[in-house]
Image 1 (tube, one colour):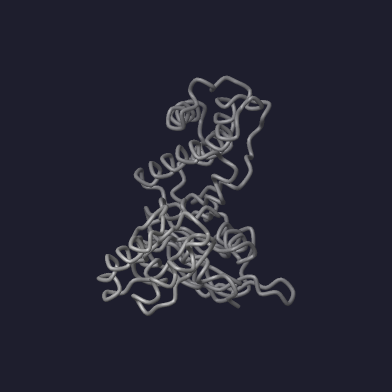
Image 2 (tube, one colour):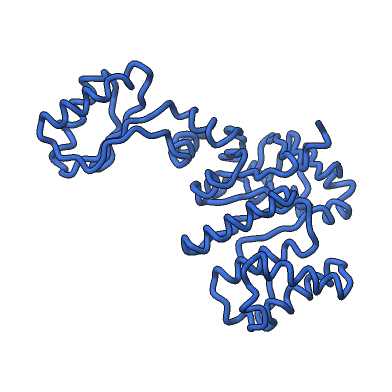
Length: 313
């Protein structure tokens, strides 16, 4: 079992003065998976990343990367991973090809290997046509793709991605998702932090939700959604004056409180309530209430995030 674990975090705590940034957190990341680390600003994600990447020492607990201790074997640990942060670390005066070659040499590759690896990554990240252009002319999406390519120049077994798609447009973000998924298919283990919950839902095999330095929950995205409740009835009315009568119909049929936000009404469905959905629709239509949407849906990861972090201490 230990051979299947890429990152082992055991009872880690970290304080800055009187502030507890990380409070007794434990989790394992399996080899070849994408593990999402989510939480609001100030939750302790960056502190955890810094400790896992040997930039900080924990006050207590142990972190093991591919069987190596981050404190007693820090030099060996650093050879096991690469990090892509929120901002590009590339030299904008050089071309993409020159940047890749330079970082290849810095990562210990000989000239031929650095050239070969650079060409492979230019193809993988769709940068061939711009390979000889100055990076200063690159768009934000191209910069992020190049930054991710550079982080892979040494074929790391583990990649830490700290909000890799922040500020990107939806199309470029999707391109990055494809690139990240390809890495995992080729055997790379990825630990991802992101503020885009859709991104975590799409990419992560498992997610650890952190708030106020504590581990709140850890599981597959589908299992985390079950913590909020089962399926939900989501109704959107076309007119503001229809909200109250629609709410009244749903609550009368189900005997349950309906959550209302603007013209959107949501209620969790148990098995008995699920069987009454058609009755609700019939009564709404009989009341001549105009609907924009009427659907049954699973809770979103956003709802998990909000229900488990907002207002918690």
